[in-house]
Image 1 (cartoon, chains in turn yellow, red):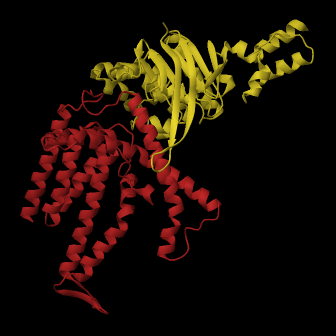
Image 2 (cartoon, chains in turn brown, yellow):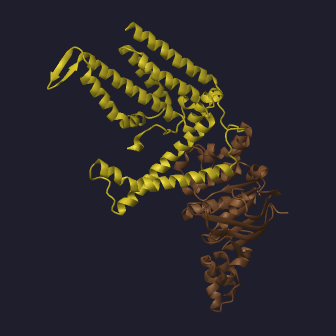
Image 3 (tube, chains in turn blue, red):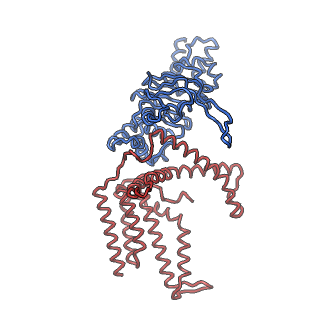
Length: 283
Length: 266
């Protein structure tokens, strides 16, 4: 059984008018069943309102399913008594870097999670040091978060989760508010976590470039999983992705267009290097 | 204008004052403020000023940062000095029109000005050399005995440290909203007081909405990191008195003794 598993997960937002009568029901997540193995790098893709953030919040037990079940490391998220164990198993990084940093100083913020868990003082320091080093922010440990760039703040947030020694990290659009440079920094840090620390990563995003390195990709649309597969499989379906209002990376799009014009290129080219190699092979 | 208040603005550097336990600094600042009102006479204030100067020197914080805090209370200072100068009865020194300056009034005004200046700079030293988190930690620990009276020390400390963290963010946001409204033709600078107050509404409403949204996000982020109140929490930086803290207390005590004796003698 995987580290994160959902079965027929349904979540409904209920809108009420001023008297509390039900005005309407929006099904944000609709019958989603996933099984994520330990150590996998998963990307969840979808445009705004596709239900990807709602799905993410279930993994951290912030939301409880309306129907169906979510298991994190074998624990049912709807059971009250296991909430705290679930939250230390599956850490969560949110979109807005300013609204999730609690500490006044970088190192104090990273120590916040372990403090809450009741970790002894000396071990907190060890965890803070190793977490900050893992995301490359150790030299900024004495800085005020207000003096950091968006990408740096987001890496501090990741370190804050990492210090809780989770088995799995859920990142809910961590790069949505960052500039391209900050995005690259964060994605590099996330990949390092997955490869070096062997932590399961669930990356929620709507940037195509960020999913290239994922092991598996889920594309969501209207609360359901519309597509599932490796990045190569996903990107070979250019027309389908366009119909889901998602952009394909420029390189893949270029390769796709070239193919349509009759140039014999393989499907699902992801990087510039691959395209260059494929073109060289033809010439 | 709000930006000029140094309270809550930590100045990052290494110094013996920075390393002191926050409880020493809070206690010291309180004692210092009390001493300012206890001392009467010139010598006491010289002692207070010299003590403060030495502490500032030790803190490695540039003096202009202390003065920044003064700007915000300049107005208050002028009013206090003005009232004391003109409205204290006693032997007349100079008089013109309906106002007169008395000997007692002049003395009182100078005393008040010195007191207030030392008080603000003194408390600025504390906030400049202590991270707000450290400060709230110190307060939390000092308030802990009040638990028996159901004073929620941890909660208050947590609220304060979060408030302090969000002050610069919300200031920046106010600035942004103001510019956005100016770009749409809002006018903040003309009209009478009432009209000006009314023109603040388009700033305050979006600011409040965004603050609530931030509060909601932050609460979620804190819960996601296993925050569940003060129970069972450990500290990354527990407060334990060191040798230097005992020395700190002794210095403050020494200052008090010297100050009190001096103001007795003179």
